[in-house]
Image 1 (cartoon, rainbow, N blue to C red):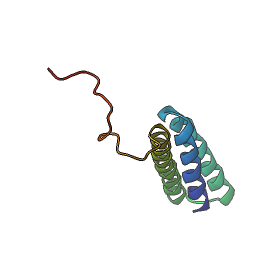
Image 2 (image 1 turned 60 degrees about the vertical axis):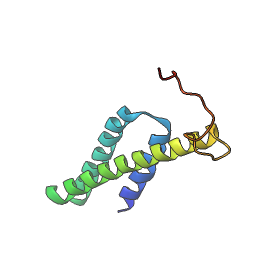
Image 3 (image 1 turned 90 degrees about the vertical axis):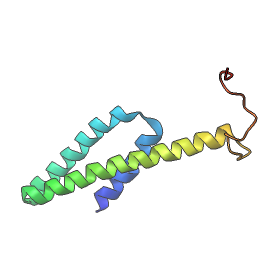
Length: 97
């Protein structure tokens, strides 16, 4: 459970600074830690594999949360008034003909 919380926090940090391909090496690191934990505890394969999958999923959920925080932060920086960007006076890219 503690490692899943760490994976969520790591995913949030990764989501704010990196693109999606960073999840593959991060998932490999999480899997290596899960295998090392299973070997150290002499645990059965099925429970530890389920924990490893749960940790990888929590890493990915944290990444999505980090992306959301990043988009909110960028939106707040680009629009300091807090007004909806769709109702603003910004022109469209191309006029409709």
